[in-house]
Image 1 (cartoon, helix red, strand yellow):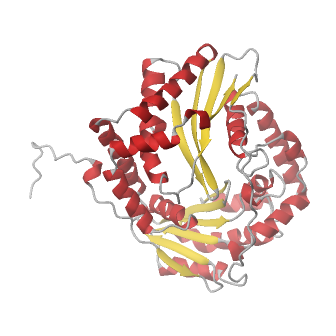
Image 2: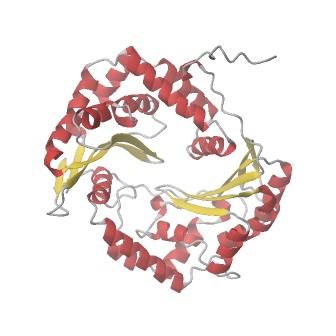
Image 3: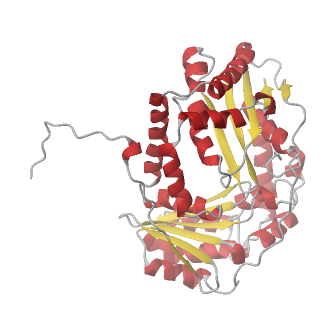
Length: 427
């Protein structure tokens, strides 16, 4: 039947859609390593992720986690850094190691047909990395050089200081990079951290793409030998040491014409019942381009090109931080408007049009997260690493659709308490 192109299709709000997270396959390799895999997509490409408990939370010496992740493919007992990189490039593969507060995620993207050649190289990296001294020296020089450049930027310094104020400089979530810490890193430090935190007995593996039993068998053939199941390690408990001084003004450049503003408070992670409602509230306040902060401070006042507030959930806590950069002459006015919008959102109900717009925005983004195997895998990986399941996803969808303006105002009154926020201004 011919398509009638004279009549426009019916436009539906995202809030009217049904959201279904495709199921993921769960299994174990022969040695007990957990494997989560998703057969989706039509292109013969694949993503394989290895997730290690090797973030800053596991550090005994600052800077080690980032250094180990950056130097993973700097050499093994069989291959030099150049040989590893040439092999990856020959097969058109992308190798990325991303360090976070709680985990290191190592991801490989490649054509599915190249997995038989690539997986043994990755296995070799995880089991035989040597961290050559010359590569360490180059890494340290580069990191220190970048740090010296970045320390002249007010936004970089502000990002460091707000986390340190919220969690404490000795807390893994509050530490920030310092030159002397990088200089103090030794090869022995890297080897010990690698041995303790990159054991395959503690890894979780994820795979997505146009894949099936053949690809899972390949993974098992390479990674399913030895190592055994993970042994639970003793968890270190770090005390949050929030600064008692709420407001900090730092002159980083006496001739600077711009100031960086960071205003933040501690906030629970995804396991707390207020987290999902706060996603909606924060979006209204400063979480997207149409937010109240953006409308006021960018569009109306013209103080900045962009201002945002964001939630940062971690395994052992989290934060809510507002961030922007403005001209030095309007810093006080911008800060005043940020707190003014806090007053408004805690006292006045959001109107129906604004709330519907934000719900459609959040759910529209969620539709994007369900479009394609790699996006779906990322959603599942977040759930699994946080010990959550599909019920958590479904509950969040229902909440985004049903939450009311009154519930949001009550939540704002609970968390947007101005004298509980830390404030950092760096010029």
